[in-house]
Image (cartoon, rainbow, N blue to C red; front, side):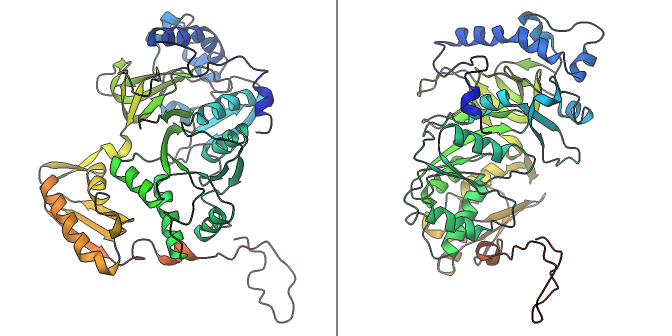
Amino acid sequence: MTQLSADRTETRERPDLGDWSDFDELARLQRSRLPELFERALRSPFYARRYAGGGAPVTAADFESLAVTGKQDLRDSYPFGLLAVDRRELATYHESSGTSGQPTASYYTERDWVDLAERYARKWVGITPEDTFLVRTPYALVITGHLAQAAGRLRGATVVPGDARSLALPLSRIVRLMAALEVSLTWCNPTEAVTIAAAARAAGLRPDVDFPSLRALFVAAEPMTAARKRRLGEIWGGAAIVEEYGSTETGTVAGECPDGRLHLWADRAIFEVYSPTTGEIRADGRGQLVVTPLYREAMPLLRYNLADDVEISYAPCPCGLVLPTVRVFGRAGFGYPVRGRTVTQNQLEELVFGLPLEYQVMFWRAQATPDAVILEFEAPDEVREQARRELSAAITETLDIPHRITALPPGTLVPTEVLTSHRDILKARYLFGPHESWDKALMYQ
């Protein structure tokens, strides 16, 4: 992504925040993009085949009659069934994590990447040339690490490619980099933000004191409760916790405003909600999020169902942005029955992170059975029993369900060696001296 700034002037103009004054003007902006989007989409084998029998969309009025494009459509079209440009125009190729066993492919042109980077960079705290930006998300195939790196470079920041799956970058090294380089911004999932803080403590550092340059943590990939978000900020000494929402197939689709709400970037895509039970598609309310990117070149998507459970609202936001807001429930929005009550991850997370900060509760897990919730968490010796009693009382008062809670010593759920290890990273070697072990010859670790 070395040509992002230059390419900005070579491609069609995309709107900037504030280029519209109300939702009617925003809707007209969206509709004006549809004819070109339809024309481009019909160049792909998938959409050409879908509309081969007639009924291809041509005008903005045709949009409401379009069928939803599902994840299975992408899987069935793997890898290039949705390609709408010559392969020589592609800049990058990506795949989803493939948790279903079937990956989906995504690809972008260089001009697509300008749009991707601009959307990610719409952070209310800003990304500046003064920032050192640690990217602690995967780089392999998924888009997340590349997205942050492109946005950081677009805004002139110094990007540190920390990855999140590399053996060369254990947590102990990440902590050292954050301190030595005076990292001011990070990008990771919320669990990773907690784990890095625990690794800092294991190294004898105080996350809330010993990283004074850190001003914001950008987080995504997990729905978060207000309690966990608040706790993350406390753990990291008041640094801003800024949420983002997106996917490998779409890039960033929503970002957080200063008032803590996620705004959909509706100048760059059309957003709707789909009811899988009725088949109805609406502009707002609760359902599965449907996205139609307006400027996608390599892989146009018409009414693509991300299948995430969300709620869209057009109510005014105190921040003043004329953009819809979204609440993302994801898997955390689903629960399990316990004695006739539905228990969700969000409910338990609110209670766990509602414990006082000084109890240092960072890691927990729970299992819902038909008869009770079984929950374990880590806490230091001196507060362990008090924390257990308080959490039990909170569950009884709030959820009124049978439960069994076990308070464990630190290092039980997340082994201490994970936080402190310095892995032996090797390159292949073939010749050894007389007193050296050759057991690791030819090995890559």
